[in-house]
Length: 174
Image (cartoon, rainbow, N blue to C red; front, side):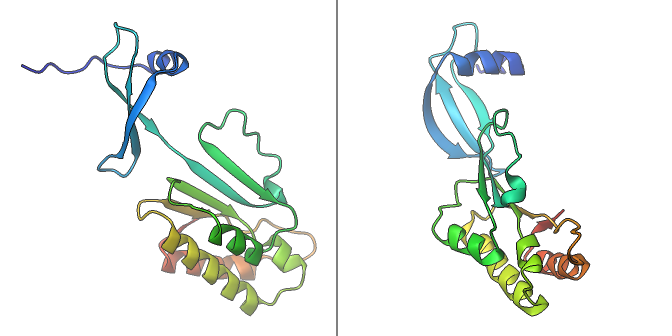
């Protein structure tokens, strides 16, 4: 006869994680989230407990440099000074992105400031979005931020292009 597991509160989970448990059997649940079976815990807590691990990649230009990663668990931030869309394409080509549940991209401002044409920006964004969608796990959430306002150039035409491309590739635009 099986009994239902006790309710697990976040403080218990934190305490268990800090006790350096033996991690086994990384798998994916039906929702696509990574799950880990943890053993070797305090006897008052269930022998096996599932912990959902969410992994994020935040990638883009130097506007990301002020992100404080200290409290961002399971988050990788790739800040690339002066990066243009094509630079992020080259980074993504060489990176295994299947491990990430969510990927947040912030890029485009340097392309606009450096005088890239709307056609070139659109082609490069399309290449980047296609690459992300094709290399990432099918359950990965891909989020692309709009280019924030700039003093030196109007970003609205680029953001309109980005919205259309994100719709086409089923990518979130924020």
